[in-house]
Amino acid sequence: MKSWCPLLALGILLAAAVPTSTRGDDAAPPQEKPAVADESLTTDQLDKLYEARTVRVAPAKDAEPVDFAYRLLKPAAIAPGTRYPLVIFLHGAGERGNDNLNQLKYFPTWIAEPSARKAHPCFVLAPQCRDEQKWVDVDWSKIESTPQSPTPTVDMLAVIAALEDTLKREPIDPTRISLTGLSMGGYGSWDLAARMPERFAAVLPICGGGDEATVAKIKDLPIWCFHGDADTAVRVERSRSMIEALRATGGTPKYSELAGVGHDSWTPAYRDPDVLAWLFAQKKPAKGK
Image (tube, rainbow, N blue to C red; front, side, top):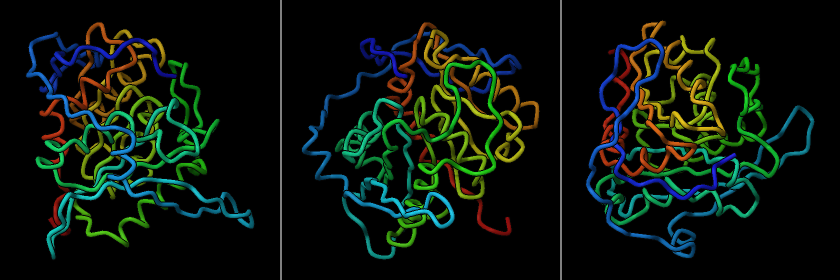
């Protein structure tokens, strides 16, 4: 599903303002961005930083339970009595498997770099979708949306189970749980947000798509969506239609459509410090407010 073209230059400006366009074609012209320091992490380093865990899920009533793998990054130091943000990352189709390691590419790698861990101490939940399965059972090549199924896929059920397991075991701030994903994971982000809008403080879906009929459930959520207008793997219309539907319902999502960018819109998104600052600044209002 992902393009095999080289990673795009990190100097693409992201559109920070919410435009008034109802077509969703909010192009971001290229401008200079600060260079990102090279803090490359090896696979062995990621393996040590991210704790390997499993969660058991029953695919259906009376069905044999299945063990699903996920990884968890913890803050470098956990202060007694302090609760920390949690980011759920849903990977793309190319990272599926059963090694519980391949899903640590892109965002999980970059957020684990020393400077990022210092700036944004947090937990990161990175589940792995099984081979030949999907977070959401949709045709990625279609321009038209697919109605959301009444029940999540088995692999999405595993994400929910991993989330609940993590909340029970770790000092997570329940008002600062955010959700992001790219490509197949972008679809997953839209889907899971609509199924559990009360859980999330922010959603950052990248080059995915969702069901426009679900936007009333998520219109009050802080959302920042990214897509390249030259994407041939997942058409940009998939993000445009979600943004248009959200705005028509009274939502105020941020939308950055990257001019001339293909499928890899996640690199300029995740590597922009302004995007991370926005993500970690979001917080659900206290109950009763």
